[in-house]
Length: 388
Image (tube, rainbow, N blue to C red; front, top):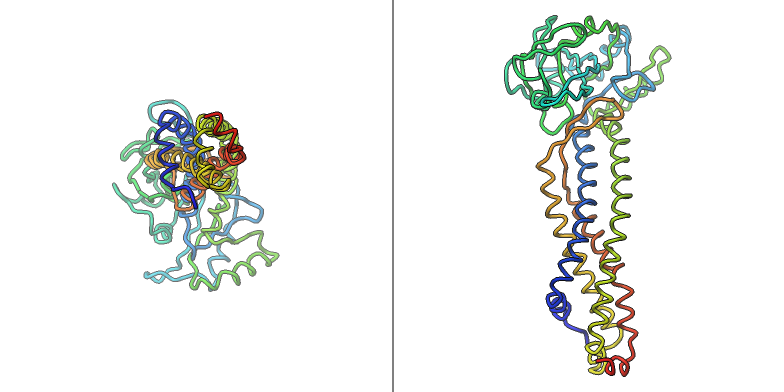
């Protein structure tokens, strides 16, 4: 004979004030836990979605990012001749030799500076990135001091809007277009003609070579050829892997930070749940004795109190997750530690985070309720009835 589930629900409803206060404490912890996971996932998703699986990024061996890489013109030309490179509709190879540098810009509404990536692009740069769409203006003309800015740059930084002027590399650059790359890192970049940027920054080498594979299966052969050739000092990565590596350090830091914070906060929530359940046991001593006298076993009492505690945790988890979901409406910017440039991204809620968050809230409820539940189950029938 089991105690009905409705018994646990009615007891929580009877103690509405303590139920609300305890669940609110758990909800706050769950909110922090879910928000940090969403932050780390948003960063990872933004960078991973920046790349395409069939695109290959070639950088200097040992470089962790394009900013630190350098490929001389001879090596770039040799890469350009490889048969694994796809041919576009215009009969030209889908390959772009690009330069990436950092410039200092001021945010709108303040003079706080930030490092922004400027990418020198070629003719094939846009066809290689179909997610990038020009939303206003036009593309920069070759060999000109014209640039196009990502949507995040135009919105957040002085001089980044259409028709405005940015000054860097001792030159004035006119923004002639705005592009939107969706939820990718490109939206936080400025693009211009690669050769013009190389002259302006006095850089004789490219930062990377990007191309599309003729066949996805050609990647491993190309990688072995490039990385084993003693004439090269290059390494090749799929573009998706390259950007996943870019997010790894920051994402791990955010996850570790979230784990540390929620561990500290959850201790308080668990103690609160434990106090609530101990108080429930103390106030219902006679009730527990009556249930035992009616024939309910110790395990039935144990499960009834555990279910109450789990319901507290689940309620707090659902409330915390509900409020955390609104964090997806926010866009924040932070420094990418791999490239030292500013990156804007949004919180991202996934089914995996929902599952992890609800499991975490149930775990808090279980830990907070297990000791009080054992205390209730171990009560002697006669002593419990006498205390009624």
